[in-house]
Image 1 (cartoon, rainbow, N blue to C red):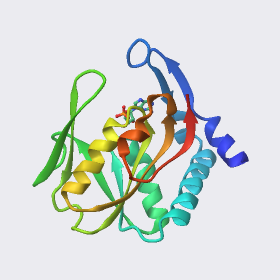
Image 2 (cartoon, helix red, strand yellow):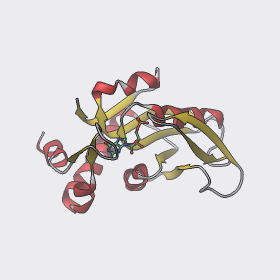
Image 3 (cartoon, protein in one colour):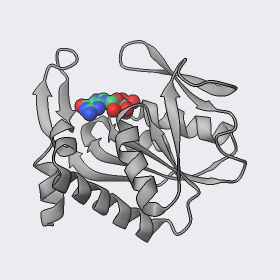
Image 4 (cartoon, rainbow, N blue to C red):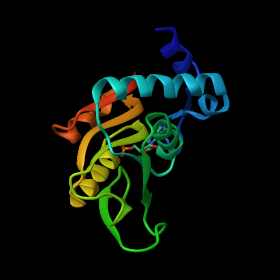
Length: 177
Ligand code: 5GP
C-alpha cells in the first residue's frame, strides 16, 4: 500500500536515545509533512470505522498520543479524553503507578472523564513493552469504561508488548522488529 509506505518513510530511527542500547523511532518528520500526516490519520480513521461501529471517546496518552488522538477524534466526530502523567490534571483523578524499564511512572485521568459503560478507544504513538498501554487500560476499567481497543502507529514487535494487553483488540499501523 503506497499510503502506508508514505507514512513509514517519515519515521526516523535514532540509536542510543534516550539511553544506550535503545533505538528510538522518531515521528517528527511525519508531523512536519502535512500530506503524510493527513495520510496517517486517513489510515487510522479507515481502520477504526471498519472495526468499531460505535465509540464514545478517543483516549490519548501523554504526550504523543495527543497528537494522533485529537485529529482522529475530530474525524470520527467524537470527543477526546487525555490520560496524563502525574500531577497535570486538576480536580478529582484516578491514578495508576506502573513499572518502566528503569523505575516507575504514574498516569492519571480525571474521575469524571468518562461514565460507566461508555466505549473508548485508547491511542498512542508507539507500543514498546506495553506497560504504558496496559496501565491506561487499567485506568479506564477503574472508571468502568468499556475499552474496545488499543491503537498505535508503531509496534516494536520484538518486545511482545501486545501480549500484555490480554484480550483487548490491538492494532498497529507499522511494525518494527
Ligand atoms: P512502553 O510502555 O510500551 O514500553 O513504552 C511506550 C511509551 O513510551 C509510549 O508512550 C511511547 O510514546 C514511548 N516510547 C518508547 N519508545 C519509543 C520510541 O522509540 N519512539 C517513540 N516515539 N516513543 C517511544
